[in-house]
Length: 104
Picture 1 (cartoon, rainbow, N blue to C red):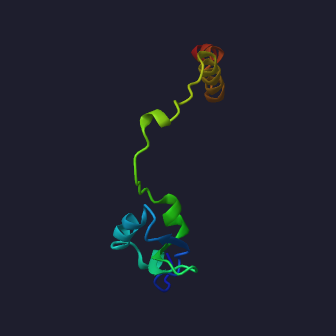
Picture 2: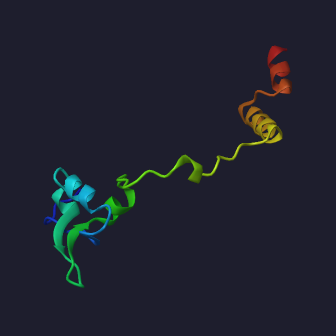
């Protein structure tokens, strides 16, 4: 990361009443100073400014989602799995015809 002044990458405002605020304050204690700064929003609320990547990618959870809310994963049908295996065999030269030629 190039050098720059503290807080120069902080573009997302997190107000004090946001559920993630305290976790970001804790995170800031050991984070790169360019990624955050304390400040005031345009509507005069106190909070912390953080980088967009921090807001978007930081895995700070405020509450867990119940397992029932997570949809089940999709599974491929047996036919689809066979078709994929066949295609992989063709690409890698492992079809029965290829094996027969190699044995001759």
